[in-house]
Image (cartoon, rainbow, N blue to C red; front, side):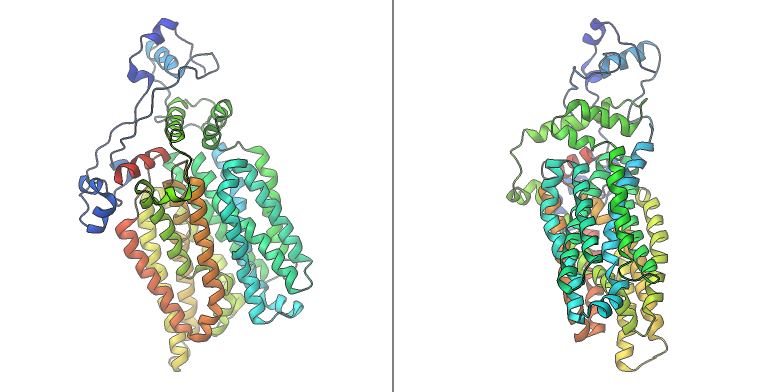
Amino acid sequence: MALPAPPPRMAATLPSSAVAPALRLRRHTAASLSSHCRRRWQGPAARRGDGPGAPLEMRGARWLPPPAPTGCSGASGATPTAAAAAAAAAGEAPYRGSEAQGSLWMVLLATAVVVCGSFEFGTCVGYSAPAQAGIVSDIGLSNSEFGIFASVLTIGAMIGALTSGCLADVLGRKMTMRFAAVVGIFGWITVYFAKDAMMLYVGRVLLGYCTGVLSYVVPVFISEIAPKDIRGGLATSNQLFICSGCSAAYIIGALLSWRSLVVVGLVPCAVLLVGLFFIPESPRWLANIGREKAFHASLQKFRGEDYDISEEATEIKGYIESNHRLPKARIQDLFQRKNIYAVTVGVSLMIFQQLGGINALGFYTSYIFSSAGFSGKLGTTLIGIIQIPVTLVGALLMDRSGRRAHLLVSSSGTFLGCFLTRLSFYFKAQGLYPQLVPTLALCGILVYYGAYSVGMGPVPWIIMSEIFSINTKAIAGGLVTLVSWIGSFAISYSFNFLMDWNPAGTFFLFSAVSLVTVLFVAKLVPETKGGTLEEIQALLQTST
């Protein structure tokens, strides 16, 4: 129910604290960081105990929003502060954004729609493994030509990554996703009607462009609409549906021909196109381009009709206005002292994610199982079965245990999985324990996929969507996404050559990367759970 507006003189005599409710200053009680590497990056913040390992809610957020504008419109024409004063005069506690849960149905609906793009991402990545035998047989591709078909997806994704940030900023998050879905539909149609290698390559490049754009804009959109207390869990749904897409391609691909499997990729594109008509645009993007009424309407829809968005709206607008006073971001600005820490964390996590071998296993799962003497179809089906529940558990725990804990557990698990797979190929090469070789390979790859789905899959994308300021997000996010796809191309293209060189040595390299990832996360990656995007920026600015 709308609160009545007080007389004008009442609003005029309100204290300044009522006009602009500041963010609470919260003290951090955790022990100070002792590592020299942390002190180097965090400077004075590390010595205060505001280091990367501490939960965000325990650290001092020092950015204060500017006074609330007096021209905010409401249903009765009252300002948010006037409504608060009226509530206080009536003896009621104001219904504040930070104190009430509001309605989540629109947030959940919007997340369900946009993760169709994540599902599409997964089907594009998972398509090549079950389709390999059929494509090689029907089109007559050699192993090297099929290697190009599998890896050329990443070429299109690199182009998509380069343009994703600019498209998302200029066209908006929703229109960018629509455009990517249309490109994906054309890609799948081209693959379906392919008669030779060149048509397959063209279709695969189009699919790569689609996934390159979606891999950036989907997690960014989710992070911009989600309340801070559930942002991590909702953002993990991105990885959940990537895994679901891969699993669907693996399982259905064992039953259908490679041409019929194209339908699995077409369906999420169509659902995404239709679903986007029923959800609002990102409120933060609307605020960033100055569409004030649309910003308030969008934020209100995402928080519920009876929810008081005044505090959150003031915080978002104050942060964006402070960024608008800065010069337009350029690529060289990413290497300034205030941005270099976030860029280092974002880029490094993507490098470790790809050099850990995920896309090599994703593109060549069937081949790896066959090389170890295990059924390729059964192996890919088992992977499809375990990925979804494991990722779901990770999503439910993300906002409880934090990003760092998931990364540490995940990278330790991928190390173990690669080490077991390495033992399998080593025993095979040496002629030792031949009965254990298939079992070790199966256990190693299942452990790897399970561990990856908990942390190294979703968390780098979550952190990427959280740590960059609104004015650098397009450039920095595009750079991080590009690095991810360059790493994917390097690993997926070289994997066949590495396996010809030494299968055991290949998985030893992957396990070594996972071990380095554990050390990097422990030393440098910040904990971002429990804070708004604006609070995270405040923390990172005081930490550099």
